[in-house]
Amino acid sequence: MSHYRIEGDFILLYDIELEMLLQPKISQLVSFEKLVAEPLSRSLEKHGIHNEILENSKESDYKKWIITKDGSIGRYISENKWGLELISSICMPTQWWFRTCSVVWRAVKTEFDVFESAKCGTHVHVSLYREIGWEGAFGKLRRIAKAVVYFKRCIDSLMPAHRLKNTYCKSNRYNSILRSHTLPAILAMIDEIQEEPDTPEGPDGRKKLLSLLCPSDSSNERNYRWNFTPLRLPDEKKRTIEFRQPPGFTTKFDAAFWCQFTIYFIYGAVLFFDTLDLGETATLSQLRKMILLGESHGASWGYDRQNLERVFEGKPQLAEGPDEEPSPSTEDRARMHAQERVERVIFNRVDAATTLPFNNDFLDEENAWINSATR
Image (cartoon, rainbow, N blue to C red; front, side, top):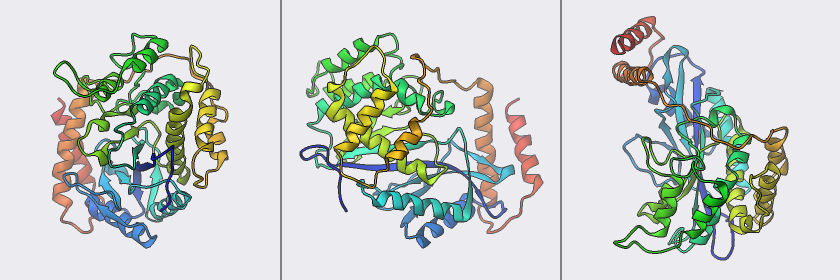
């Protein structure tokens, strides 16, 4: 397996989480395992993609692709549509990645129709292939952090609208701590943080940086566009930077491109951000320049520059400012909780079945339970 060097002993690894809304090409109401996970697993194996079906409570070493449920997407029983997360093995960027994405896409399409959904996203994790992980790379982490804040609105400009106002990928730039500060002030705040150990007087520099970019509030601290919180994990192998904003996996192009974009963004930020001529606001041309600089200094992995042009083409620059992520209403929360309770009951009853045709009684019972639970 080849690797991807930044400089010196820096080698980037990545894995990708693909959230999908799938409709099996057979119409049977059975369990997630029987109707979705097992057929997909068999199809992936036939196409040479080794995988495992992972229960929520289990751990994985990420040496195989993983098939698992995704509660944030949900299930649409009346339409026979199921939310699923497909997680890649830990990879090094090579030309084989594009072939792998094509094979995975073909395996999925063999058994399922794939639907767009605002609830689906693509998450790319990037780590360093070193025993000490990101330790000793604090200056590079600072440059990545500054690029994330500076280019926030440019990256927004490349995204569909539903990835701008989403509680699972909130803005780092307009979080509860940084929203009241100007961009130059934020960049200066990041520069002032030094790599230092934990002391009784305060946390180390890495934790200070994380709390600035991903502060804890009423929702999960990892649910930011760029999630830096894994960097505090005790296991160095799990210390990643996660890009959570890209849309869901609906074409073979999606997974391949967003991995490229993330790798080249991080590479460009590490090597070139401090050389850019920064203005009061970032521009799409600046972002494109930094990514191309990152690409030009990386190992070739079959990169097609047309992919980049395709994403930038015709995209207007969004005006600077926050996109407020909507919070669910009390009624919405009650309905979601009721939906979960009903689905647990219904699917516990049909899990033992191997085949069970759609039955309107299930749908009537589901709706009746939900309506009664939200009154």
